[in-house]
Length: 173
Image (cartoon, rainbow, N blue to C red; front, side, top):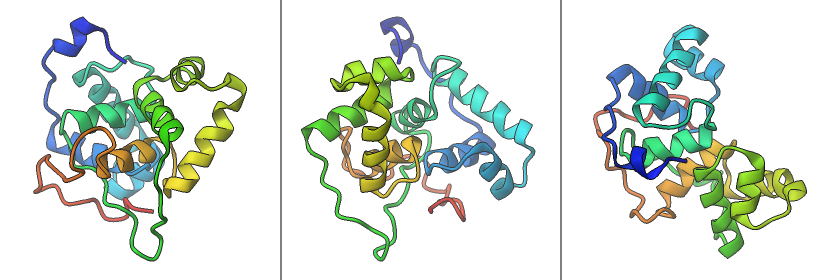
C-alpha cells in the first residue's frame, strides 16, 4: 500500500465532514449511497474520498478496501458495528481467509492481491466474494471494516477513534 517513506509521513487528520463520509465507507456504502445518507452531491463525496486518500498517503487509485484499512488503522473513524444479532453469522476465518483479508486490505490490484494471498489469480474473485458473504459483509471495504471490528488486524476490536461521531444512520446493512 505504501512505501517506507510515506508510511513514516504524518497523516493529515480528516475534517468532521470527511469523517462522516469515511464512517459510511468503512460500512461498505457506495458513493451514491453515502451521498444520499449525508444529503451531499456525488461530486462532493468523490472529492472527500480523494482527499482522504491524499491525507492518509494512499495511492490515488487505491481500492476502497485499502482506504478503509488506512482510515481504521490511523483511527480516523471507529470500526463499523457488527451485524445485528438476527443477521450475525458465525464467522471464524481460517489461515487462508486471514491471508486473503490482509491482502485485500493492503493491495488494490487483483494480481497483487492474489499473489499476497497465495491463490491463483483466476480464483481471486470467487474466493473474495465467498469470504465477503461468509463474513456477512456487503463488499470488500465492509469486510475490512468488520475485520477491524473483530480485531483481526491486532486491535481489540473496540472503537478508538472519536466516539462523538456516532455510527451514521443507515450505514449498516
